Image (cartoon, rainbow, N blue to C red; front, side, top):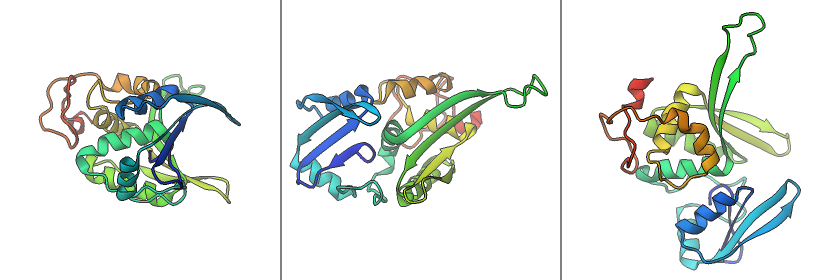
Length: 221
């Protein structure tokens, strides 16, 4: 709801629009919604939409800091540390990217100079929102990332990006269980970095890890 979701100006009315039907169906399942999912045509193709009315949820979302027409005004939200992994994962599913690719830029000069790149990134039109997420993740997980400006001058966008070593720690933190609600295609990109290695020597911030047990990610680095 902090990314692709929308709080209508009509109090109590909420919606979510996404190009990924799985994302809409996941929200529908998590909230036990009976509202149907519809398809709408946009300039970028077919998107999937669910809209419903829930005065209690609407008021709760406003209470944690969300507002209608929030894209450029969203700021810090009242998200507790023990739920931040789930919140961050939801943001990545909405406006983020898990990118894995092979960089062979220097291979023409030296065949051995081929590297695997991994980046976890999140885009927002609100710098305040990304500053808050970056500071919160730094405090909880101990990774720092960097924020870069992009987009048109009159409609700037900012990107919070984490490079490979930090991204691996983030992925193991946000996908702490094999059955957490998430967008499957992004989880699939991360799956090779979530190999079970043993039992964690200490409990990380977040909900209990169920199913997969890891060694301490900080030690793996």
